[in-house]
Image (tube, rainbow, N blue to C red; front, top):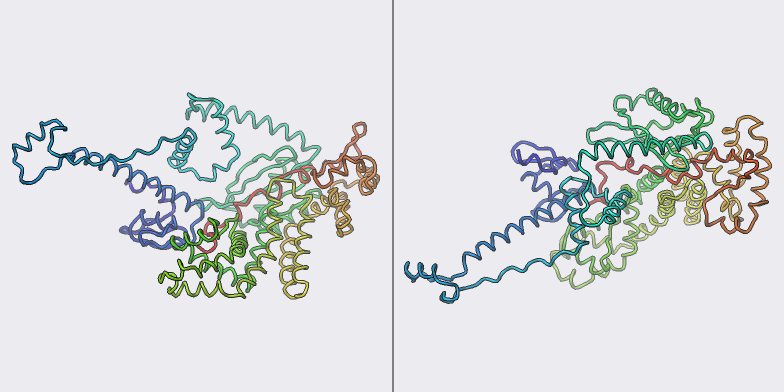
Length: 594
């Protein structure tokens, strides 16, 4: 029964006897939970093959557990050794009599006959205040089975800073205080903030964000959030397991959520591709005349990169690169040798999804190309027969020496980097909707430039982009936001203003359907596009490329430009279209083939 309490059982299925089945790669292991831990840790030890599909965060967690248990064993062994040493300070020869032994036992240490004194083990150096604090935080994570990613939460550092200001003697809130006093106080604060945000909706509108994910009980959950210029709030979570594949039921669910906020207040709905996107989007567009629908930008970009990786020659390139990574990372000695030549740099790079990791790792491998070749030609590698003469290693060496492979790597990096750049831009917390049209246009242009002499390859990759961008991500709001972005509007190199202007007017007609509501817009657009009035002052011109758009509203006559506020949750919402990466991970996504 004690074994069942081991937290690593959540990653395995217990079989008959002493066998366990890994939930990631489905491999059956003999030897129980201990061998499973080494399997999941991907540490080459105890003759256990490393798991090829375990998530990186799980591997890190299991390694920490193994490390903490090893430390405990070392401490226990040291104590036992110390006890033995305390009892063995006298070296007694077999020829001595019982009387002499009794005399020895009762004789002071200095009178003993040449005692053999074992050296005491050196004590570990005392921890600094910083190290002691870090150690206790680490223990808190380990003992409570917390995911290490919690340490990246903004509130984590706020908590640490607040405790530091309290000084010595601070006592944390008890469990009762947390679930009563502080729960109620924070709920009240959030409620007040929500009411403040609701007041914005009548002016700026809001965006509903729907994120789907599968929990460890295989339930299909949908999280609904609402975002406006000032903040984003969690609205509710729905267990949609029983209706997820029923389009009508899911559409009814979206109807109810829209009514929670008022259809007149909702500007846009963002959802991930976990839904039957086309059907749900059509339902919303047909039933709500002023609401736009689009998918998560990061998810769309991930799908583009995923389709890139399925192109035959790109897929072959990635597979060959993974062969190299397996050789290096599945051998501690070769990994140490590689790091010696790369100056400690890793060959594998992690990203938010498997396709992103693959292309980032190709970039990294390309940068280390010359050093990898130096390593293969080094005496340390060539003189070790276990390296140089192993058939698998010979196949890997052949790949590294193959010029065609490196040309494929260069090409794969060239086509993926523009879209990785877009993903970085939309994921770094800055307002993205006003720039994503331009970013995607530039990314597509880079493909055309790279394949200027190869029309067939150019068409292959642009067709993928257009299929994902045009059918899923692109919304007239993106065009309208780009049109209203001063860095786009006043840039003489931008050549797509004419095409986005049409979408801009479609958005105006949709959000402001009557002539009375659109009466003053023509004059406002004339002033903006010609950089007249305040748009033409030095301060405004200097800020065109350095400051996120903000539009000027005359204090004595606010009505002509209030229509711009209808874009509020879209134009200013830094987290829109970029928020939910977790939904695009699969539980079995693994790191660059390892």
